[in-house]
Length: 204
Image 1 (cartoon, rainbow, N blue to C red):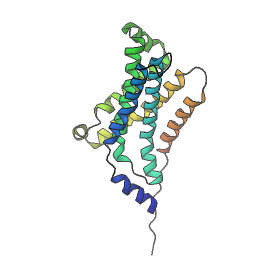
Image 2: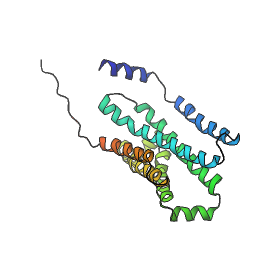
Image 3: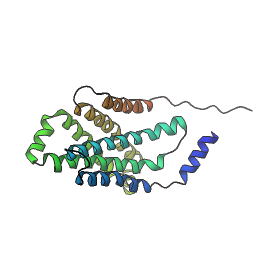
Image 4: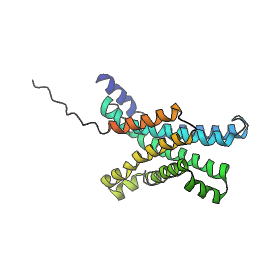
């Protein structure tokens, strides 16, 4: 308990806003690397893949916050909104690279969404994330009410599953890395179903 209290005490002194600045650095670096030829012969594909992968990492980090508080007593709730917003913008960047730099042709984009299942699943995940991003502010919490806002943000869970499934379907063959991410997402969601154990107070 003493160690947990010390960690939480230190975390309380750390503001959440620097996460937005730190989160902006990797995409800028990736864009510059693409312009300078540091990403190899197909920089667009590298940028597209890396933005999506980073977005999945951030989404998993966001899902870790509640289990960490519940099972380890470490409170990172103050950072959850920033991580969620960064997750959306990384996934948006992943989508924009595909739309603007990769496919570019509107009719082909629409055809791919309908005909390629992994793109359909990825787009479904993005659509689920849209209301989450739009309501990630205090004004939305006040207008919706805490209960309705919390229920809306349960969309994070199916969005996370679809995002991980999109990665599994995207790669050729059954590769281990995407399956690991899908397994991690599944475990984190199952941990939320573990019944809470009430602590008994010591009787003096």
